[in-house]
Length: 255
Image (cartoon, rainbow, N blue to C red; front, top):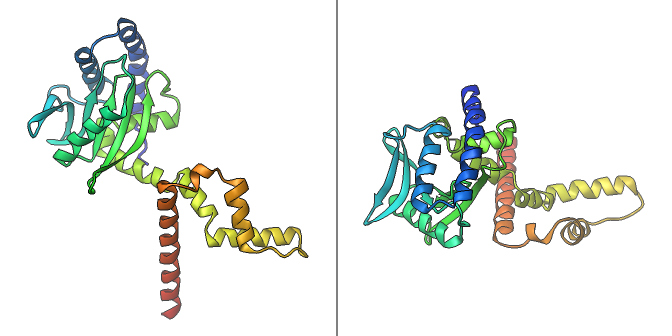
């Protein structure tokens, strides 16, 4: 993932301190949606580094309807924002609206926010349209000193857009997540390694791969990471990667 420049880190430190007070005041006053949208536009400029006049567009028109905000970089829309009042919880039907906006315009990234919580989603233009949460940021909890928080904030920055930070972050979480790790642990290669290590501990005990796999699935791994669509997708990715490596090895041996 892209390294966060020092000048951006300094901006985070300065602006987060300021906006912690502003956000709390806005929450206390329970400002409406229009005022929250103005606050979000200010944050896009001051915290995230966009030009408020040239790069932040209010009520962006999309085929007969409007999205609350659009952020542009070099004339192209980098991401859309759907804004709800600061006192409202972000709901799934709010997300559907934002995703619909993005899908109509062919824009990969949308942000759903109430100024305090910022949820970043990536759209896949399949049929039907799919969307995936990249990360969620709570502005009351982030610290400019934590690297993980810096990286998440950088996704929304002008400098981050220039370095394709959202794409890189998404690729990272696709490769390193609980479903992928669980799938790797269940792969033939890893199960075989575990079986050999168990036999090293007890040489006279005969252990089969299927026994190791059963223990992993029933006693070691949480059911939520081995069942469902995401678990199936992760296993498929691991199998494809293993097959690709096997083919490469065979091709090298044949040369």
